[in-house]
Amino acid sequence: MQIREMTLKELYTVYDVIKQLRTELSYEEFEDLIYDMRHMEYKMFGILERGKLVCYSGAAVQTNLYHKRHLYIFDLVTDEKYRYKGYGKMMLEYLHDYAKTAACENLVLSSGVQRQEAHSFYEKAGFEKKSYLFVKVL
Image (tube, rainbow, N blue to C red; front, side):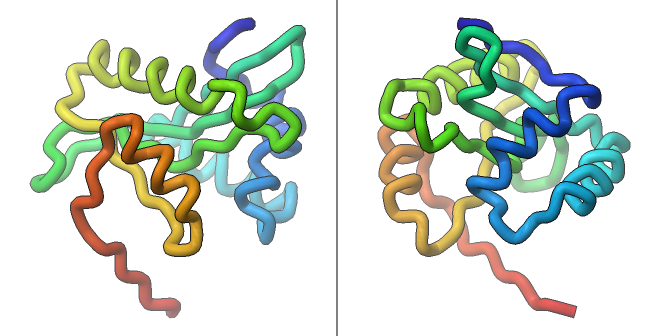
């Protein structure tokens, strides 16, 4: 097993896993968005088993007034064939260590309303529900 930062050359590999979470996202849109997010130092992290990507997370160190310096986890998904084997927990532990190394005060993420199973997972990992996220489509 290996946990490492994924490269732009591995976008097809990443897309095969991320599309399980972001089902509405085409590959072309995914690729465009990844390139757009580079300015914020968006990092792609993967857990690989025998060269196969089994868990993916996209995150970036950010700073704002309410979370101060923090690691924002934009995406966290384990390939459906590898779920319930501890990979998500391993990824959160890796991101925790990465955030500490980057002098962050918090790990922050947002999760969809319908994802109750994910919410339980995050709470067991020590996350607290702190706010509501409001979105207005333009």
